[in-house]
Image 1 (cartoon, one colour):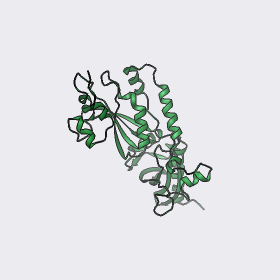
Image 2: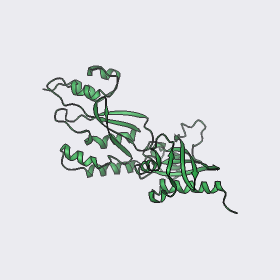
Image 3: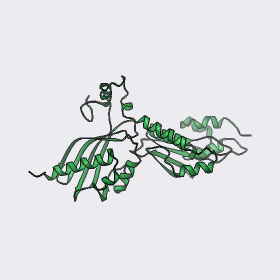
Length: 300
């Protein structure tokens, strides 16, 4: 008896997902995705290249586990888990794929952070038969095990962080640092782009996978008189972005003059609305650790 159309489509999607997400075989994966792939997901750039680039930038610990899969006509829906994605929690996903000419042609998804046992009102896991912490305990992990810690690839992130620091140039001059960072990814799983906030030059980093749920504005301090490029602080900014699932803006600032230090500080804070022009009023309305120290000293 020949395979039904739906059975073939389900087998195609399972093979495609394993090839791309688990094996990271991009050449082989091209056979499964249409060159005219249509992407509806809000957190993935358009087309086949957008998806492939997302996975190329994801942590090496990324793992996809398929669950229930159903098909009807040209459409396949698969329930699965993305763990090791650089986020505090794994993602539970329902991916909807349209098949055309035996390749994946169109995609939609619904994503949720995986709940812990304490967070689950039903008392049941979102994926599989057990909560991740219970699985870790059964495998001999020490108890209690924080559920998020059983899924976060901390060792991979730390290895990437240390590797990046060791690869940096010995010279501390700004030009060498800029040249080095131009050809580097600050940390595996993070994207970097040059931006501008309220006219202030800014470098923005955020997790390569998913949608950040908070924003951090990082005042890197350092040489308020001599200057120090924001690029020098990208490893720290990237680590914050991953740990907090945040978009981190590392802002530049003008150098101090013979006046009060509020001037460079206020300029740096200009991207954070709706602050007033006086640095003294900032801590009262918005938390900013860099402000109190800078605002209480005066340059000679």
